[in-house]
Image (cartoon, rainbow, N blue to C red; front, side, top):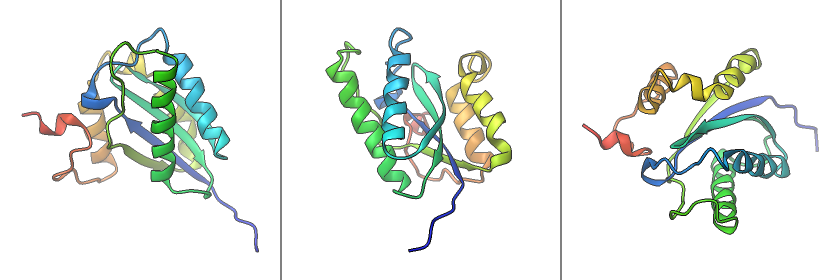
Length: 155
């Protein structure tokens, strides 16, 4: 079989259920390190991870060894189990079902990494809903009747 040559960069965005602000600053680094391990153990390269109490951004150099949906499912399932087993959240933690995924080229790496690593400063000026909808607009993703995040139901 011939070798596979690939270069795929994906940016994932997802939230705790009902977009609750459950990711606490006291343990977010522990969560990010755990997710990094999940991504690396599946053969991918984690380029950046950061977020806010109500959402997370993950930027990955992805190998074509599995589908994006399988990777996201594994990240969510494994990290959810980790949060529970480590008793990190005193509330019932679980991730929302939906997620956003955006692709980038090699020339975008530094900008995307900087954007993700500066989430705290970024969200001093921009709400998550506005941020996510702008990303969808920039990538020409039609929202339509999608309900990936609870805010699509807000008036």
